[in-house]
Image (cartoon, rainbow, N blue to C red; front, top):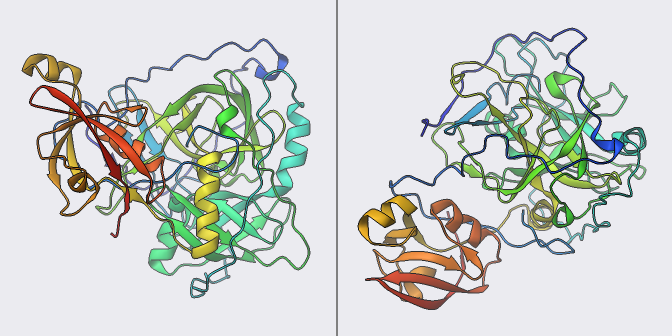
Length: 448
């Protein structure tokens, strides 16, 4: 398996001229199921190294059952190695000097608790009854913003990402990795609305690195156009979708495609030694999304937001490239999952994370066959008085299921916990000494 590492930051971005190969219009009807595009398993399976203590999220409220710019993210794209694919975060940023005139300071000092906000749930995503791409774009474009991060000096500190207005009183949903460098450096953050040049000061309401989601807020003297949040759980493979954002800083860019696959769990490494991000139940798409699309909406055929664009894949062997464009394999965070996180961030400024309280190692099917064991997540160490320990499990036990979720490795263990809320009781199936047993486990909140 290819090693995981961040790519070096780009200092200059070239933008190709007009042209390019034509592609069929998936909106013309008759779109078939898309293939897996060379996907060969989630990252994290097949290894035996101990993983860190797991944290997780909950299932989204509402109708869904499925959980979930320019060339730099605050200056850096992130690349993930797979056997065939390299997943890289859709880094938010043009090189320094490409964006100028950012003079609005970031405001992060307001820690007051907002009233609980309930974000609406739209209709199921259609498969046959659909709007034209032009109609979807016309309705959605006023709700999409360009997020400008940092300065525009020669130090490359400037960056560009995307976001979507989710409430008429000014709340904007985006990716955490779009704004994280600015928050860390105290750099300015502002947004530009569609077809407007003025910068609007943005306040960071809350952000959650573990789910790669963040909420900003801008002043709303009058109600702003807000997107309708749909139901990602209703998506099917082959369903038409539209992506809108600011790839390479080109605000208001619209691309189309189909849902290529569902329930992907790609692992994307963070920078500076922080924990990796697992995109829970991600939607795989073939619509062209590029650096700068991060945080922008993925829309269904009714123009409803069904995902937040977050990552792309790169061709293997290009780890040293400072930037990678679309190869038709992108990933979006499902809105059923993102809605739940956004509501919590708006209400409290933070997101809670249930966890199982253990470090584990993946037992592959091959390893299980060779040793006479079973595939799953083998417990390496337990948190004292944590959920797993309280349930009576021990080091060496191999967890094979949590409720109805099959556990094939450490990623699945993380995902299964994130599909629940703190305090939920789940049934854990495990194997000890060749004997299968079950236990009830109560998920606790991870404190760090």
